Image (cartoon, rainbow, N blue to C red; front, side):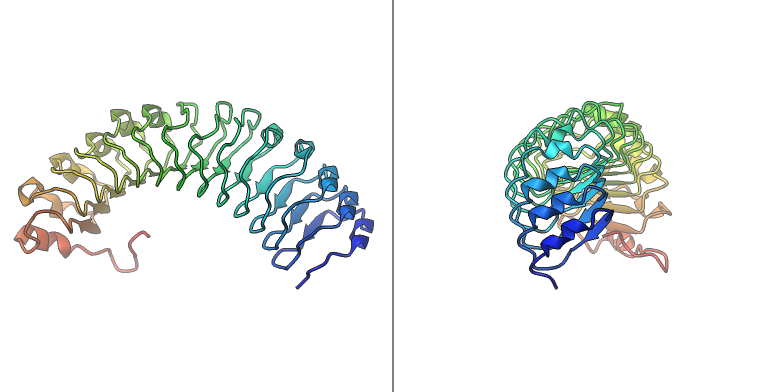
Length: 324
């Protein structure tokens, strides 16, 4: 384990990859700026409060991991690292992100999760961005991603976002969207145009209605809307042929529509702690052959009724485990 980095490191001018993760390094020498051939640098899991000013001379860097340190800010001129494609600043002490970061036009993966960031400027130059990870910060808005047409994953769970970021049908590459545990009251109907979306988590918000456009997301497999304020089972979900996992627990739903019994890909239907009475459960629900789990615990019904007992006996096939 290393606590101090020898300044003579700067003499290794042809070095292209440097890994000093999981140490006790609290300072990098200024001489690190002499490693101009460096394309990959991993200094994660240390105790760095800052990067030296000379760090911006590492203009060949393609991948940089500074996660799990105690960074409070980035050095001036960070935009000069214009070849960066992968950047992880996760789990530091960052409060702000300056406009220099948004100029990194080659960026494909940007991980800012686990900081204390209040605001992120628009990332309009990041046209190659594929993964944007912003979870566990203090954001009230999500930066504009108008030109990031290659996006595959957006994660801004556990912030204080009150309004959906601008979404459009052009996000045809998007497969994962996690916006759980925010302050959202509405879902953007345009998400229905993200026709390759497979995973959507909007649990722990204040959502009342699911737009009808969501019925167009034929690739959607997992949907969590647990702990919201939804009163009606979203009829649009019954149109999604590949939807296998639905979590609508801890809402205010009173009725399960008959169309649910025609969802031939449905394996998990989680409706615990709603306001569903026994008469509002389709009697043919246990006949849906794909079902592996139905959770109706905490609803105002007799859990020992024949129908509920039949549902409770549904088990995953051997060799399969319930999704976490």
